[in-house]
Image 1 (tube, rainbow, N blue to C red):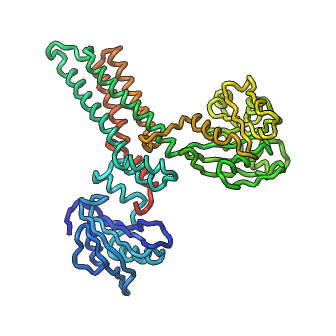
Image 2 (cartoon, rainbow, N blue to C red):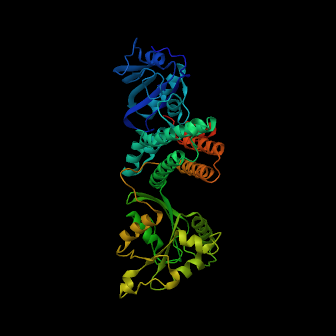
Image 3 (tube, helix red, strand yellow):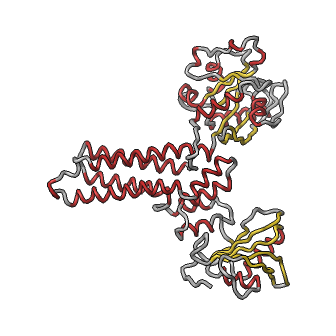
Length: 465
């Protein structure tokens, strides 16, 4: 048995989804995990990294039987002694087994506590820990593949290389401040610092571009379908989802509440919300639905305004009429950023060349479709990806909002350092900006992280992770 005294009290949790299945795994980690593993199986010894078939005993007899695995510290996921009990995947059996582990001295693991211990013991960094959660929650092949690359350390390696460059540059700058007359060289104007600083800035920009794609890949985009009643919003939802998700009739006001659906189209996760048709009505239920529609419109990343192409020819004017009281701020600017006019019912036109964007709609492109025949739907999906800037590649890496924020703050400090260097020739200020940039960049991998941030990240994990 391993006797590392730095191991924490033993935690236990069910590591497989609750429900019926062929196998259920219960995991232990901590200073008494080995001892508890021997007690519950009746085995006198557990050989590291070997599968032992055993019965799992409770006070009243055998609870279950299966395989027990022992991973000796520090060669385990958490860096502590870890024991896994693999029995039958029944809810009652797993809970009986877990209860027995509690009787033997383990306590219930908190959400993400296994991963947190791995982070504390330098088995993984913060990006890799987040990638575990992202792999579990992935809803597309692209998301899973990108999360796997982050878990393997690809994203972290990019950040660490930049951190190494920043550290070396800080040393160089500090030396130039401490020994300003060394060899009669003016360190602040010889071009070396500026060249190395610009190289780091270029590296940050490269990672930032990749991270923005990764953020879209992970978080997706919130798209709201809005417009007047009976223009085909629910029909468009059904076409995009490939199912009859929404009820469609020719009766105005059929949709009275928001209807949400998550889709993956062209690799992009789309959180799609269908809304009640916007109009004046005395129906109290429909009024509530319209108010919810207005809330969704305000929060949308992309606003697909569906309209009947046989009835309207000025979509931008229509958008201002429909959404004017739903959008706070400069409506022209906001509509330019997120409006996608969708001209539906094109199958009813004698000539599809009649779909000509009105001059007041420029530079917002109109997207003609027929929800009846599905004509134009593929082009609409392509246009959506283009609008949000989604161009994933095989090198895309899953990223989170906090990564983007840290990279932007890093870049701002580097730009400020460049100004202090080239304009003011202030070595001390350059050094301070580089220190702040390193601190911001280190937040991504967890080299410099507040306890509050760590708690927030790991609390979103599964109990058994």
